Length: 303
Image 1 (tube, rainbow, N blue to C red):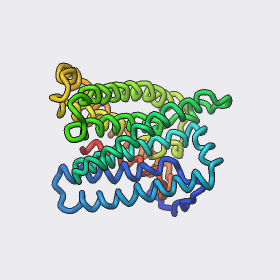
Image 2 (cartoon, rainbow, N blue to C red):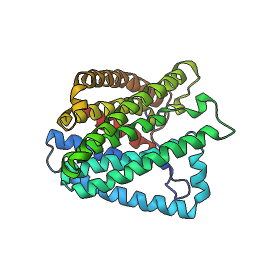
Image 3 (cartoon, helix red, strand yellow):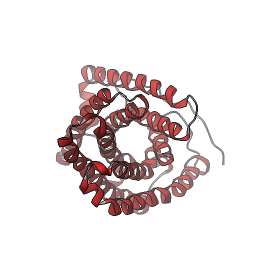
Image 4 (tube, rainbow, N blue to C red):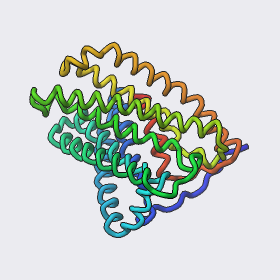
């Protein structure tokens, strides 16, 4: 029993994984954690690094759509890769939150919010509609994985950014409706987690799973409820903007504790399965963009 290392496959434009925007998610949330803990210099460095990451990834994604539209359409209709497009929504949500908290550039953060909201609608109802109506579908064990929970992460990231920009960039007449919108997203994201986690847990316990099947995005089992906890805390922090949210504060606190407890429960389980994958079964450690989907949950739980 030993840990093995291998060289990862090179990134190519044609086969670039749609979930590569998890790099922005991971960098952004680690920067926020460093900011909360007062780590000198790290939040600022990661902020500018993340600005570079999101610009490059947007440019590369546009280039891929123009040059390889067939490959992009194939990804959209793929049950494993299609949900990776939700990382684009989450990336704009997380980076927009960084802009508010680290730079105070509310106008730029609002632009990120507009992009995130539009992409949330297009990807949520576009990708899920395509996966619903396609005639040939994989078995549940082959199609469902922890990456599906990035749907929840994307939804909650939009909820958080909505609340963060409200005190600065919304008229009084818009604050209450937008707080309601953020609350609805938070509740809807929680419901999505319960629906998807039921299928994932069924796949864990009743379908055969090899060590190679246990990919890094399974850490989003924890990360999705960690960001749901943060979204609830953000709503409560700004409850004064909405009488409805203030009235529901005890319910929101209870639901936050519920989400945090689920996330805490997952950590030992995921560590045990990681030992089984890498140490006992000897799956080699090699760079894969999906590993950013493992960094993000750890950073989010810390926050």
